[in-house]
Image 1 (cartoon, one colour):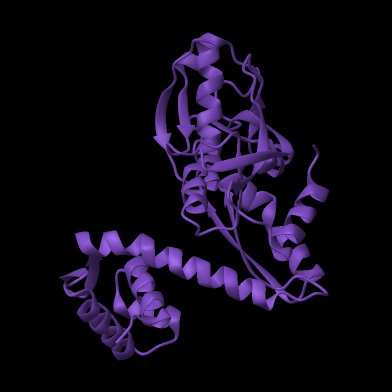
Image 2: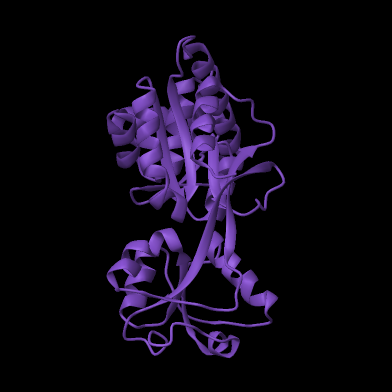
Length: 296
């Protein structure tokens, strides 16, 4: 009996979820149907592909070896289906869009909504992560297009400038810097910084700007979300460095105070694509909308 496409889809989903129950919900199948498909797939593979730990299913070495090949097959099938489904009149289908945190939270939601309004038969699904996560997901084929800060680190990806952006230093109104609204290099070196996690484009650009001035920084808090950093800075726990668009509301209301510094914190937001990617009508339509909203 040959391997079926449905078995590959179930294998991929169980590998991602690590649990039959969650996979069955997302696939809209019964748990028994998912379990039977995995058992049959392992039978065809000639050996187990998962390690059972209670109710969790974790890929073993054979499963990890097969998973990229299974995902490549599924990706190619989706491309064929999308190509066959494309209308001559307008784009249709599902576009997987990835964006780093700042772009995904403050720029993309309205744009994705506008895209859906323009093309009712098309859907843009937005995944938000840090810059490293978006690059890696794009390279693996889990995304059709990505938006991030600065040039990509992976050679398989190409970048097109999209928009200008500026990072700003911010503190809470009770912070010692709030009254003077500016900081020297010595002050920057001695500050308690509230930073995003490593892999974040914002943190990478900030650290590069410090390095150009020969300044080391002390990270007091490492937080995985922009909103958490804003709240920590508001509470006076340290100095944050965030996109100006992310803190515009807080600056206008006086909840945060912008601090001038000798650092060059301008950056370029970019559109990321795989070098080997061929543009479908759906992707071309989304790119055209992005370019309309860009400032390059």
